Length: 367
Image (cartoon, rainbow, N blue to C red; front, side, top):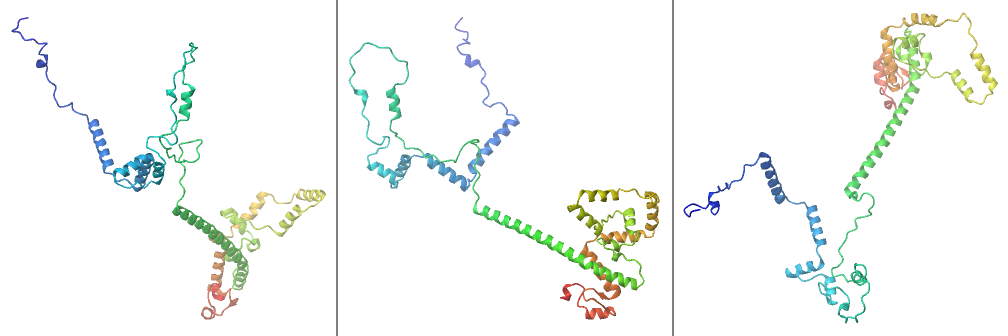
């Protein structure tokens, strides 16, 4: 090769194209990740730590710092050493980096023993002297502070429930007291309601008898206010059957005296023969002249047609009321139609006389 020609291999850098200093364009996802990273770092730098977190970090830093480091920091800061434990140790001759107690003699400077014939070398491993020296070596660093984390067993990672604070205990006791008061209030309300129902049922019967007597004197043959579900005799003939057939009202009258006596006899200790005789008498065949089911229905239906749908509807509404409400209706009917006050037990000549002499409509006004 002549000297006039250029040596491309020697000056190869001159012929290579230098890459652009600008990097390749970034994708949207990369730009977004970098922005999130920068925002997270900025938030961590500007975030104000809470008091609890600051106390935890300060406590952890203090526990991880040794006694000597703390004393050195106080000495560098120009503060007097206020650590009594370290001052006592220094008076006893302790020096940082050395162990407490008498220094052990170095046994490595002993003169070598006379040469003896080589014996079988033991298996390679740590000697007993080294292990004992490590076992009985004095500690140079003080024991670290290990906090007791409670009893540990199955489930080491489970956090212990924090003890309730005074506010939580007060809130719990207040809730228990409120629940207890609510249960007592519910019981009192229920007992009061049951008592009022029983008292109203006891007063409803004489009020209805008075109402029936005054209506009969006025020429009335039937009034819905006479009806008492606890007294089947207060229902006229055919009304119960009409209610069962033409309405959804189901009235189960209380057991009669004969039924109560039969139940009492059944529960009592009677002989088997008496029970058999009673059962045989009940199972005897009826005479052929008795009515069958079709005849019974045919006899009931004409009677049920005597009551209009309005009467049946009014009867249904009245019987579905509670005893205090039925008593209130009966007493209002007596006052409005006959100027009769149930609580006074007097029938006045006129409504004006009743308004002047009767203290009020309810029982409390007559106390």
